[in-house]
Figure 1 (cartoon, helix red, strand yellow):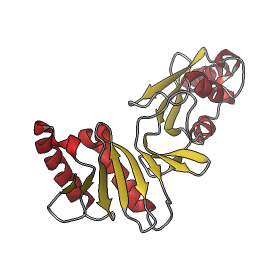
Figure 2: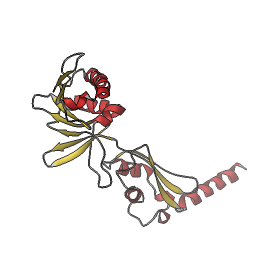
Figure 3: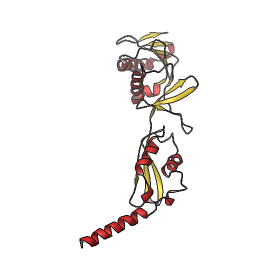
Figure 4: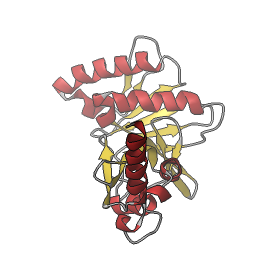
Length: 227
């Protein structure tokens, strides 16, 4: 009886391995499913074959496929598997851009993890435009600053540009008004943003924001405005 069970199991497993896939499917997760086309991912998934139905299950190397997808500069993480009905599936999470850097003739995104992410022909992210020098000395502080802006609904909509000055201080531009924000050095960033938001919410009520050309956040617990 045991021998029959082992034989049937082996026969079924061998037959299952020799079966061909029925199709391939790409599933994007999260909000950022805009930068890379489904067709591009699918092409990587089936390794340049015409379609998934020409691939035998025993010829698949799922780990290799995941590594191939994860090596794409627009993809943060992927999970590749074959379903019971023979569908080759890739669940893909794209990277999340939080700032766009202009560096001479080069332009690229900074993603949420602090990595470098290329621009996409399919979609342009609405993130702050950053100019100036980013180096090993300031990149970690800047990455944290970009994340603070991205995670805050108000700042995400309000801050549209950041200029890194030679002395390390920051100048910022907002979306709807003509004033410049003098942020100073990257210290007490959350405190400065809290002061700015409190000032903005009060000043927007009486339309005084139109009168200013500079908002200075360099001083602790105060906002200094220049008309």
